[in-house]
Length: 452
Image (tube, rainbow, N blue to C red; front, side):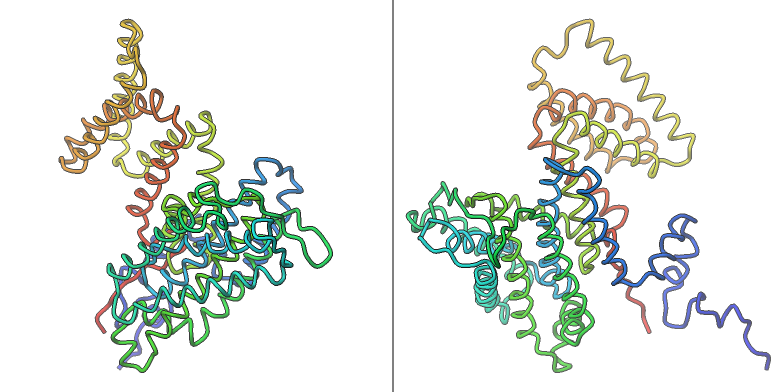
């Protein structure tokens, strides 16, 4: 019998028990994406972490300062929170909707022991580990019901915990916690004989250390057990993996990391308020983790960079926000509309229709009240987007041009004037596009189940 051809025995060819489409996926990628993947495979994870850290350190030397530096601080805080949430959600597979409360525990805990609120000033090398330990204990207590509750039921318990924290800090012990006014005068980090004024560098050090420790844990027995629990808790338990204890560990670890971020951030901004730790901030953390890729440390960092630079940087200025808005529309059209003739027809029709609408509106003085017209246009835009999903491809081609003109009208007359609404909608749109184009996120792993 002749031996099989060499291409069948090569490592690039699909093997028995493997999905052929996934096995040949790298062969279908473009040259640029393929080159990036090749470099990514050849560069060690630790070298990549070092490179990212060095880039972060030298950015202020390249002119990053003032408002840009504050955006960098906010981004590093969200990255630290996303990395901690990844332990609970990405590795263990539990949905924690009260995670932002641990961030608040770190902030309020540090404020109580490092301000004049209760007359206590503990050195930072004791206060930060103290609030982290307290968050770990509270995390274990929150995770205790996970022995009998899972999935949506555990999510409800954690959501109650997050909302209870906001209510507690708002209405209980206003003399100590400050009530709705919070604690407005939190001392900066002082300890070890020097003042830490550059929180940006401190957060880089904290983030690198946390990611390094978690990387070691990820490839330890505990990390592998966490992922086994995420995939199938019953199967993991049948293999004598202590599922309940591992869930407690995950909540404790995630809580400690969030408390560390909360303590540093409270010292940097100099105050803590109950509304800082409510659901909107939780959504930002989840957006970073989902966008980057749940289960990936690099994804948590990348997601935080994308979300916060977009949220705090690009979408604050109407001029830069316009670039993001119209750029996203252009990229979506380029990626989704095929063949090229169809794209050209849509763009031509949009240009003609937009010019006609502008001419008519300019001649009759419409809109006389841009905000009201923008609100009605927004309602029509939502209805149009829903219709786009339901109709056939041919009908969609005819419906896209008026929807693009309407989107531009709503943007220019309503959304661009209200940054708070615009930022939320844009982040939501980015997440929707990402979930459609790449459900596993930027650095997440594609899950494929193959019959063996």
